[in-house]
Amino acid sequence: MRIPAGVTQGQQIRLAGQGAPGIGGGPAGDLYLEVDLAPHPLFETEGRDVLLRLPIAPWEAALGASVKVPTLAGAVTLKVPAGSQTGQRLRLKGRGLPGSPPGDEYVLFEIVVPPADTEAAREEYRRMAAAFAFDPRAKLRV
Image (cartoon, rainbow, N blue to C red; front, side, top):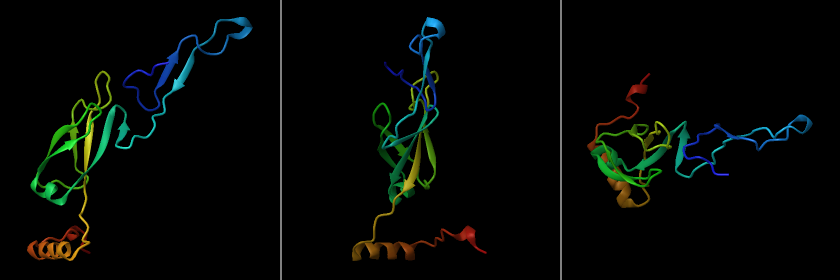
């Protein structure tokens, strides 16, 4: 049996005449299969849409960048807007599961902070802390 392209989680597929035989020797009934998609290492599904969690460096988020992004049909170049934040989503129209209409791919930014595992790296972080008047918890003041 071949699974049609674009099936979604929980969708049923009907196999006509491939079920159990009917009562009293009647013709076989239909067999219904429910689709359960296996987890993918990169993508999550939401109906026909797919979600990709894209790790980006702090400088890519702050300054903007062009990065290669995997899609179901192959990699594309995505422009990360300057000032991007963790949790921000961008849509790649028509890059989700096939169908009529096809789904979209949503790219969810996750800013990944480089480790401060050398004295030079720690010094760079100290310089940044001194250079920026930035309080990420300003809205939490009580």
